[in-house]
Image (cartoon, rainbow, N blue to C red; front, side, top):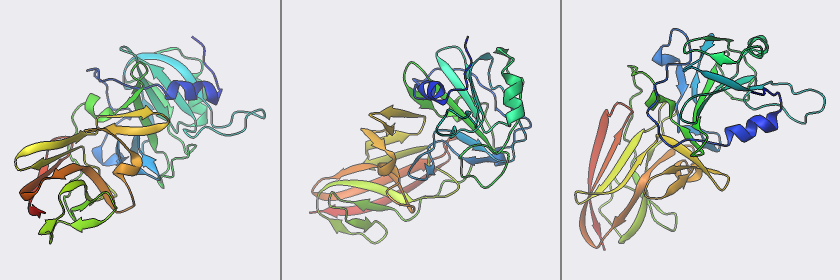
Length: 293
């Protein structure tokens, strides 16, 4: 095994991602409290989607599963490097089934100590968190935690591999609108009729939570279902799969809207049903009667 400070080598590892194996991981911080999770997988993050879980006020990090350290990333690469790691000081651990876990924003001393290690056990201390990453999170000592599958080249939502936690963020279903191919928006609260055709469906984006699952039905038949369990890299873009791969721009066209799926409205009277849910399937449902001409 070779450990390296080189960001380019670590970046090649981080651009390889997931398929969906049923592995059991533990939470990557000691004394886990669900309230510590301040950014979820799939949430809007600047002009992209978040591929990690971000924990605030996390004082100590720990190995979420047994494995081997395959890379150590340092915030400062030395005089010969052109830029710093966006993860700050980080550790990458390989596990069974081609999975890797990434722990970003670790303190410099903790990372230096881990350079001397190879094999890790579940729950083994990784040291204290720091403030070295480019995570634009206001809280100090936050932890960036990713899980990926190196064979399928996909990020995994860590939540689906973790023990169940309570206190889910409430997913709201507000300000529902549809957008036609020309970019015209229609608010469903007052909409009575629209031209027949294909529309994108949006709801009001929440700053503190993200929809885990969205389903759209027309006249009782499901026409779209999106689950944020994985994020894949395709042609340099991060995508989430529904009826087709959707990019971060599809999901978050602006600061106020979150994409739920696409709908094709045929001529005549239609009942459009929208269902959103969190990871624990706590659902919100809304129905709209729309005439398409």
